[in-house]
Length: 438
Ligand code: RM4
Ligand code: MN
Ligand code: MN
Image 1: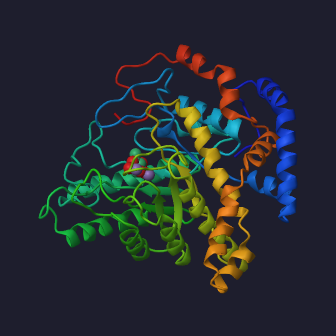
Image 2 (image 1 turned 90 degrees about the horizontal axis):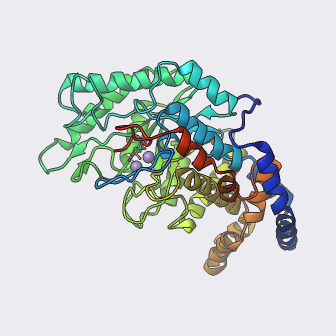
Image 3 (image 1 turned 135 degrees about the horizontal axis):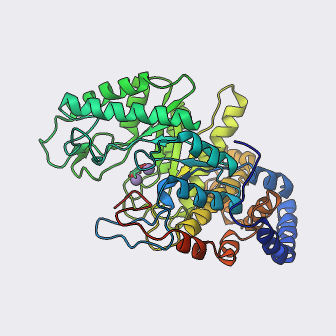
């Protein structure tokens, strides 16, 4: 990433917005600082920590999403990957928390990766993991994925899916990405459709070929999902299968946890703890969920769960500091914005994930450990709650302002009129969905 920054929103506007917010923010920050000091916490340390937080934006999230029933396009949707980068630049400019973009191929395929890389660098953006797509057929491809891709019974289908993944690695290399995320929808809709073990054996064979094409400094993230589109048995349905495959493949293979890919009420924070314990936690797709893979905005349904996930991450990071292991899971958002302005949802979501990160840092770990040792169940639970109940909004806003972002990203974005501007500059093109999802 370069230091050079082309801003999309006029920097003067952001400064003006911050000047209007300054008095209120200063008062809130001082009050919070006083309250934290009485708890023995230095607000400046937390603000500095908040400023280090980063979560990648999904390129497919800046277009309006939809469901199996309909999609209601928004105004000024990006029509290609270059326009998507412009929207991602706005998100980072105002939040200062999203310095990387995760691309999805072939949705974001470009014949000029160098130009894309330069555009991104001009905005101060880099590229996180690239995603392959073998869950839908692409124009002109020789074989269909109707009956699976990496697990298909037909060798030619598997070879095509493997070749696509290797292609993604090549494109990612040109862009400066360092990881490939593989999610496959492969599975069965009927009992008997698949030999359950045979399908996983074929998956592993295919993944070994992809793994072999990874550069030395790359990681491969295996993303599990309970169901959909396979409604009876999904090949990589759970973290156990993901963990077994990542172990089988080797050290560059790790597990990716998409929060929405579990049954309701699953204890996701425990999955996070397990994967961290065994060195296989590769990264996250943050979102929120009520029923299934809902792809709702992070923290919009169950913010306490998000906090508990970050509580495990803070614990794992502290343990890693003591040892020599490097613990750096990739943080990415994976959401679909069907009824909101995607830029507003992504800014709000990045801030919600950052909020959980800061709240987790507020947990008094020594007190928690002492309560756990003493089996003081009530106080152990209250120690977590004390951190979770603390409103750290002023810390987040101060970190943003100090990093050149906006005190109130959505307020600033609306005042700047960005959506009206792109609505004019980007007339809708027939057949183009900014999200890649139809
Ligand atoms: C899947 C999964 C993948 C995402 C696609 C669009 O459910 O979450 O990460 O790339 O959706
Ligand atoms: Mn995902
Ligand atoms: Mn998903």
